[in-house]
Length: 167
DNA sequence: CCACGGTGGTAGA
DNA sequence: TCTACCACCGTGG
Image (cartoon, rainbow, N blue to C red):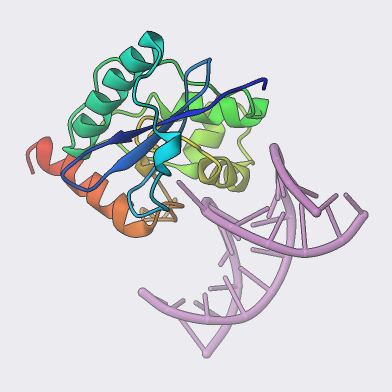
């Protein structure tokens, strides 16, 4: 057993999200509607470390769902990611609520100006939506582009961020 | 290798 | 606008 994973539920007005933690930190976040977590995978008590991480996750998820900027987030476990993905995701985290960038702009920003399409793939591989805000990346024509979690979420998140900014 | 995308830009209808 | 087509690139098989 090299890497035990712990699941924890995040209750929100939009339904229960699911967080998954490793020893190193948060490694995945799932939208509501997936297969319900098996009870035996939801420990009665969590290690203190995980518990404090989860508090940060819950707060952050709720903030982002309401269109607000999020406070501190837990450590992210991106061990299984490629270097390219890590650089894309790091760049995504620089986009504030209500802001948007295009896939090409992200590619440009990480020094791979012709890799816009690969950036799209990296966004699709993002295991931690919301905290790594891939919903703020649009196509160059200012159109919506795609979203792994379902386009309705992307629309919803952007619309809430815009309205929080006062539009 | 090869195929497949959350792309982007161009050309024509 | 919408469609067709093509160059591009990181990933996974």
